[in-house]
Image (cartoon, rainbow, N blue to C red):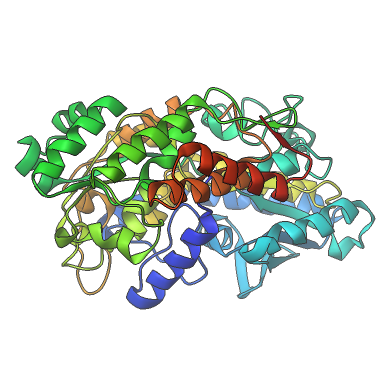
Length: 494
């Protein structure tokens, strides 16, 4: 799926430590549970959700009481950071925090087992615990665990993850969720094995001042015309370069857009294949890099983020709501975000970036409580709207996003060291209609078990081609083929 989200997390954590920035909606870090939304917006959300919260609190209490006699007294949750912990603490009715790794829901103790993703440690932890979960002692059983899209298929295609229907979660319960969020956690037999509260649809984030100077307007409709497809996007890159601007900071800014729009998976049987749209990314990126219309820096590097400031002279970035809110230095009045200087459009193709999925572990002895958590956190409209307003998550609910798209959200400027909200950062623009439309268009039916490794190794190999270390695409492809069969010995290359 990505230049791994764990990389984004470590960067977001660093940003938070330096500037008290709030957690990114993609996958937030332990120090970032605050939200940048306006106080007036928070108050309105509180009024909206007060009555439903009382109702859901009563339902939660009933669920835990019903489970009390027959189910476990310890709920173990496996995750790689504290993002979901903060969501549960802040939004799940009846949750009581005990300390940094423990909570209570009724008379059930909630234990948070946090294993960072670095060096594949989180997946290694799951690989050890989940297969033996059925035989584990009651208080040691994994009940819930979290997944990212890059490796979700690894777990949903195994017996370690429960069918949501076995928890009595129905199609009607999740009718408002976007299809792509279901496809990512559906196994090869069509069985749904996870749910997400996030729909991290994404778009093109453009510098309004540059748009006015070069394109003559910063109006989203006018800008969309200049980036409506890749041929037009590349032509606009030349126009921008003539004025001294790069269209993107790096070739890697666009990779996820291309890779989300493939017509075939990375692996067919055991054979690795490069989709035409990913090859188009190589061709387009090479031309842009050779013309100095973009750079070749890694995502999250200092060179990549220079365009967050006016002197960086970068026209656009690609990303979802969390990137806008939590990565573009909105708390710094000198940044483009701090000046309310970005705009948001769909761009050449719809795509998504990020998201966390909740799965029930096979062998859990808390199915009633697990069901309640999954339903409330991913389907309750009042809770999801509260998450959207307070945490800047693009939530996985069509009705909630439609409601947000129709609202006037007060733009709040960065002041007193606090980040402005997304509407201010986007120059007063409400992004939710673009996000909602984008989520409808995302197609992840071609996701495979090997996406994380293939995407990472392919980008690494192609970097050598873009910066001249490999003389040709074929040389870079050979390096990719070598690396991928070393990582996955069961695979062959075409």
